[in-house]
Image (cartoon, rainbow, N blue to C red):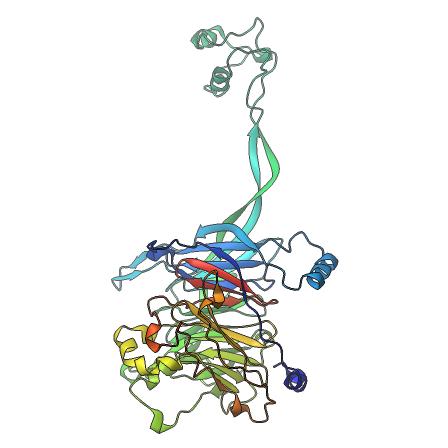
Length: 514
């Protein structure tokens, strides 16, 4: 998918990946009730892939760190990968902190829940980790750094000269107004008040060790809030994205996108405003926004009408006009009551090099080439088997679920979640027919649908393979009625350099590798 590699890729397709279970954090036992505050609401790898952050509905951020590659030199790691190409990636719990608390907006009589909507890693500096987290209204900038643990030692007097350590400790912490005699002696008045289990030798105590604070070699991660960015959004924040310049970031709500400087928390610039003069004229809202990974002047945002707009910050201060518009026009004959609802884009992601944009609406994944605005280069069916059930999904509000999407670091595959705690992985290199359905459990292949093998074909016409997955129902028995809309896998992230996926099923974090 990366530019000049397309011709070679079409001749030699990458082999389908064999996904395996790696780890699970917070696994619940059968029948255990999940607490609402423990449900994971955001997942994000950092750029190195050595750290993973999750946020939950209780406003907490939990950090995990990679352990299997920490103490391994590059040469040794390469040799190990040659001998064991499928090394087991291992993460461990690092720390957690309370990022947001529930608040109340007295002017609007509105409760602001603590749920973490998005987490984005910032550039590291001096061994410290930095990340942004946001709930509906407030964005916070966190610094997490390992601090050396300080311990108190040498708190007792010389044991060979005393009878009771307890009394010595209390006497050494006695009122500072007491006058001390040379060599540790005390006035007779104070000596008489001491308990009988302590006897001071004649001439006083020869050696009194005061408490000494020493710094040990052990470290403990400490999280500290560096900035709080607030009072800039009238509507719920749905996206935050760091700029490649390392200095600015954007935050988006339903009607506006604001540009911030990381060092300035009391001022932001409104760069996109789709709010009409009369709210009755409102036809679409902003659903997601993302900065280009390498061009600091370019960003994209999606709308509830299924369109993606690319804007250039160099054109004007207020980017009311877009530089490119990407939308997939549907034939009038196929329109229905649900057409606009299922067309709403819930998430967009740039590929690593920035040429492609992946979007997720309720029914499909779509891959867009920013150099071609005539339509998506690939459309991958995710929920086509649910089309007969749209009326029921509308009744129970499941049709409004917002599924996230992600791309592999090499750009050859994409992934997104579904119902029944399933997620799907598609190959997007030219000619690929790779489609894998996995369940978020210790046996990910348990629910996979066996599909007849299809011969790989060269992609002379992009439309021959763009609509894949329509006939593959991820139900256990192929029955459309078997899906469980209460167990939904909304959040997942792909490791930036390896074929490893982290996904959230309720309060459990599952990790897989291939």
